Length: 211
Ligand SMILES: N[C@@H](CCC(=O)N[C@@H](CS)C(=O)NCC(=O)O)C(=O)O
Image (cartoon, rainbow, N blue to C red; front, side, top):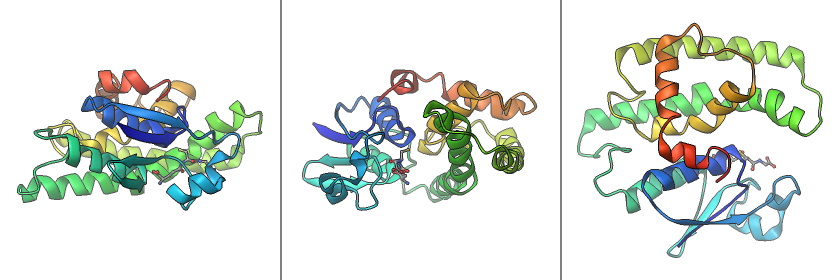
């Protein structure tokens, strides 16, 4: 069975778990407690040299980076799945790569830092940096205004079919929507429709509170 080395509440671990659930791929979660610093243990650094989670081992393959792992899982176990377009469809593939880049470059850095300030720091009893939140909020607003336009043209980020590019947003976006009062959806009906739809998928509901 696929071994998922991670912390069940971490966003990056849940990014992999949601892909497994989408495709009904069983996995064994091997806990790496990032609150105790286990991600920097020699055993984990042998799997993930950057000292973060997740990593997987599967059929002799050792792999890290949550998005690369997600794509591997679809390639290996997702025969017939449309979560990644058929590479022979050049246009769908180009749109998919565009959407994956949008998430990685325009969403993840700001969403991750906002979660750090507004969700993770308070949970650990650490003070939030208000000035940083104001700047991050302004950046997030700009980015989501662009999402609003993109999602006004089609249902999902890469077209009218849900793909990994949409699912990759779920852990950080759910943190921002459910655990902060940023109201990112209120003035953005297309983003709201999209987020509400992808966050209601059974695969996400199965792992949203822990991989
Ligand atoms: N780009 C990496 C990011 C991994 C990452 O930042 N993981 C976080 C949890 S979401 C972590 O392990 N944090 C603990 C630390 O930084 O020490 C991925 O997607 O796998």
